[in-house]
Each structure stands twice: as structure tokens, then as C-alpha cells.
Length: 516
Ligand code: IMP
Image (cartoon, rainbow, N blue to C red; front, side, top):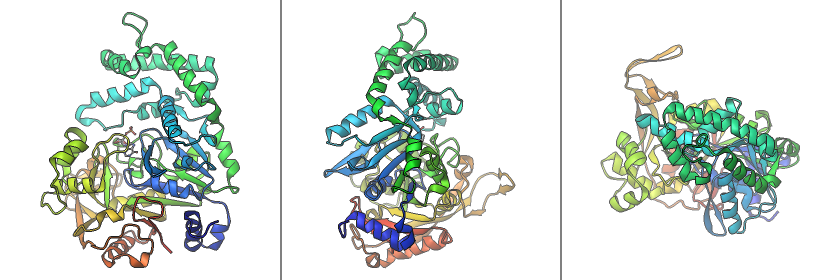
């Protein structure tokens, strides 16, 4: 191992942080976001891919976007694990994922065009198949919900997971058994057709399907909306292309336990988790270490350490749903979800500064400064200060004990940093099991219900910012005192339940501070 290489630094970090004995054995590490996603998991999966032999993306679908650097170029991946950029690594799309084979193939072609090879790449035979009808149901659900919509990525994620849970979904392995696939597909499309006609959305669905692929649509007057034969032919053709990758990856990964280092690459974030996230404003997969282990065919106890990733002192959210610390509140939500766009923001708010008295403008300035635009959708990400009640909740439900702070370099030069240390409840009485929350109560740990969070006013503690550029800093003793004051405050505010293990001081792999 070359001294001072990233691999060497990671190994030294594991030795000093977890102890010598820890670093002697092959380990399973999980990397997950404790917020609403987009916290910089891509960088850490990519970084630890140098340490791991096996990198697994256990859950979620092409709703996520991970940004990595490859040959000096920024590359966004959606489903393929970040270890793909290292030819000697084994990359696996796990069993709790939802896979749109067409979009996966596009991603593979794109990466291949950059010189990436796929000889060590596998997809679980149990990964769930996203069908064109799932895209339509997702889109129709959003269109019908009007103001109550979730703001999904419209990639068919929710409907695909719903079919899985309702025991009628299709999986990758069905593509290897054409007759079984055709008959199951026909039954599922019939069911989707009934749902669509029950919604009274036949015409809208037809228009959407035309856009996805005109071959998938029956002519008007023919039997039904979906041309099941054409969809089956197309999917079986995708299956032929993907066949070499489809394996019993659960068994494969279990076989690596104790023999190779394994990194689990999370998707989305705890506050978007289907069980623990903010009510209906979530994705449909499990984002916890337990969920990640299951998606990799492992048990939670097989994970040796889970790293919870949070943005350094600010956070973002894409789509709808409660966000107590959002700068600009409802105006920002409407701007990011309805009226705004990156282009409009770059043009119309060229002079926005973080020092503006209007929180909405502060938010725009911070977003522009931090380039917080969706990797998958290009949408402006809603932005606000770090929320400690939410962090306490996320730590409580995940049991995560190690934190990674990302994007800290972004806040250099910002005069005042606000941390939301608690909420003041400002709504009607809200019953949560045995508890009743009343107006004026101070809340230290978030509960995830949207109806509750919408009435929580953040209570901030103000900190002075720092001026010294910390970009690329790797030595923690050189961190500005103002910054360490904030990290110490966070340590205490979360009752030392988790330790800051790593600080990211820039997007590059070497711009990483491993804490002793
Ligand atoms: P879905 O996962 O497309 O069903 O979207 C459900 C919610 O999760 C929406 O608010 C999305 O914006 C959000 N979401 C899904 N994936 C991501 C992600 O990778 N980053 C941030 N938000 C996401």
C-alpha cells in the first residue's frame, strides 16, 4: 500500500478512530444520509470504494443522483454504485432496489462511453422491475393530488414498491424466464389499467405512455391501453442485455463477509425513509442501516459501523414536505417546487447575498453559492440551516454513532451561522400517542409528522462564522476556532451520542479531514 495514498489514509483512520483490532479484520461499513438526501454520499462511497472490495447499492432507484469525479470530469450516477470507477472492485445493485432497465442501460452506455468497464458489476435477481405503467401511475398520482402532491421524481418508485409489497410485482429474474415474465406482466398491466380507468385518467395515461414509447400504446379501439406484447418484447430485450449481470447477489455478498471489505452506499436519507421519514412526503424505500443491510442480503449486525452524513451547518430538501428551518419558508418552497429554476435563479438573482435581510434571498444566495440544484432533476433544492431536533431524531432511530460533515468549505466567509437547537411549537394541540403538544412548548427532538413539523418554529443559536479558507484542509488542528466552537456545540447538543469522524473540506477525495 502506497504511503499517503487515500487507501492508506483510510486504513490509518480506521486504526486510530476504531482501534487497531478493528482495522485488522475485513469489515462492513454503511454510509447513509441523516437528512433529506443529497448530503454528499457520492463522495464518501467513492472514497471508501478505494478501501472496499465490494460496493453495494442496497435500495432505492434512479430517483437518486450521486456526483463523482472520474478522469477529472464530474459524473452523475443514479443506480450504478460509485465503486464502478475502480475496475478491480465489485459493484452490486442489491435486492431492495427498484430498477428501470431502460434507464439503467442508458447509464451503463453513458459510463462505458467514458471508459468505465462493467466486468465486475452485478444486479440482484430480486431487484424490483420498474415498468412503464409505474411511471404513469406515479405521474398521474402527482397530477391528481394537486397541491397535496409529494413532488416525486416521477420515476415510478412509489408504485413499483407498492406492487412489491402487495405481492404482485416483477423482479429481474423474471426477465430470464420469458414465458413467466409475459404472463405476469400481462396480469400486472391489466391491474394497472383498471387502476387508471378507476382514476378516470385513461386519456392522460395514453398521452404519457405515447411519450415514453409509442410502441407501448394500443391504438384506440384495440383491447386496452397497454400493448403488453410490445412492452414484453422491449423488456425481454433489455433483459437479454442485462442477463450477464443478474445474479444471486445476496448469497454472493454473504460469501464476502469476513473475506473482503464491503461498503454499503445509501440512497436518499432518513427523513425520506418510508417508515421514519416525514409522513407521506418520503420516498418508498428503507434508508436506515437495517434497511441497507437487508437490501444487501445481510443482517444489521453484519454492519461494523454506520456513518451518518450531514451537510455542515445547512441542509436541503427536494420536493414537498415540512422543512422547519427553510430559509424563506413557504415562498422558498413554492419557488423551488413550482416557479423557480436554476436558469431563472442565475439570471434574476445575480446580486443575491447571504447578508440580505430577507431570508428568501439569503436562501437563494446560499443555494447559488453552494450549487444546490438537483443532480437528477435540476430543481433548485430548498435550503435552510442545520436542524438539531431532526438530527437527534435521526440518530435515535438509526443508532448511528459516527458522523461525516460535508460541504463545510461552502460556508467560509458567511458572517453568521445559525443552528436550530430546538423548536417552539406554534400550532393547535397535537396528540402523538401518549403525548400532547401544545402551543409554546419547546421541542428538542423532532417527531416526523408533517402536520406537527409544519407548526414548529425553529429556535436558533447564533454563531460567528469564519473567514479563513478551509478548502482542502486535512489537519483538524488547523480548523478555525469559530468552526470548532460550532462542532463542539453540536457534540454537546446531541449528548455525545455520535462523534464527528470525518469532515469534508472540498469535493475532491483528498479534501478530507479524518478525525483522530
Ligand atoms: P420518489 O422517491 O421519486 O417517490 O420521491 C419521493 C420524495 O423523495 C420526493 O420529495 C423526492 O424529491 C424525494 N427524493 C427521492 N430521491 C431523492 C434523492 O436522491 N435526493 C433527494 N430527494 C429525493
